[in-house]
Length: 323
Ligand code: UT7
Image 1 (cartoon, rainbow, N blue to C red):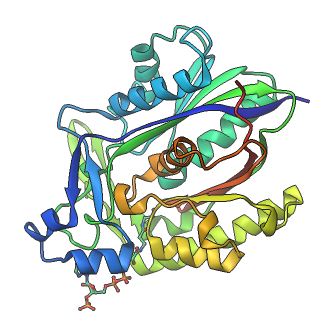
Image 2: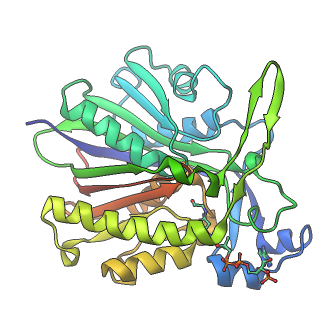
């Protein structure tokens, strides 16, 4: 049996940091409101000329360095993004060229804030099925460009960034289980209802959200999905070493952790400094934990995402970087 395992991780945050204090000068809000309602203190925002594929390139190079692989080794690139550089080619194809990878498949996955979980689960199936030996899986976003910066209910929440992992074939796990879900009937609670047609912008080009409904949905969906994945793998919640959820709002993270019974010291949180970076949030948090030396070989790690669609899902893995 072939398994996939994460051989290396990387991440990238744009240089410019926008603090709550800066937002106070632009819209009617306060650092106190934002921190107490979301846990967010600051977020990174990409420079005008920086595209999603640029952020992805930095994160990918770091992940490839950590895994000890080069452009000649990568045989699959999956990029999770809601903010592609252009309608087509895919950001994965643009990234492939920037990396100098000349073989294998490259495609994007669009599941908004669940994007990295979807991409990782898809790449795992490729590796476990023998279709790939060395996959690059990336979550990258310039989400700041989807925001109405005058809408205080949404613009305070999000930021830009990228995270990447190299997934290689191995004799043992690695990735243990994954579960993916979607409910398209909830499209209206979180969306950007705009697009291009006949050379014109159609619809509303900014993020719209029913915050309370998304909040309640996220807590319910991720807590039941965590239980589904742990039960399927035969892993008790007490055996979980790290919980790395989508970084949306500290109150959402805490509510899920409490519901499933994970103590706060086993939850990786980066939302304070990154905000919600959509598809980049889970690989950014994973890389932050790896570089802080938190993850030890053999640790059981649960990754989770939830976002527009609505979409949600889990990946449970044993941390075993192949070096
Ligand atoms: O990946 C998933 C992406 N989405 C999310 O994660 C969002 C999930 N939802 C949330 O995180 C929360 O619903 C929010 C943080 C968006 C809002 O928190 P809340 O506790 O649900 O607040 P609320 O929407 O009920 O608003 C409370 C008050 C309102 O004023 P009134 O009507 O009570 O007078 C808002 O107008 O707070 C006001 N408000 C603000 N005040 C200062 C809303 N945004 C702001 C703001 N600064 N930025």
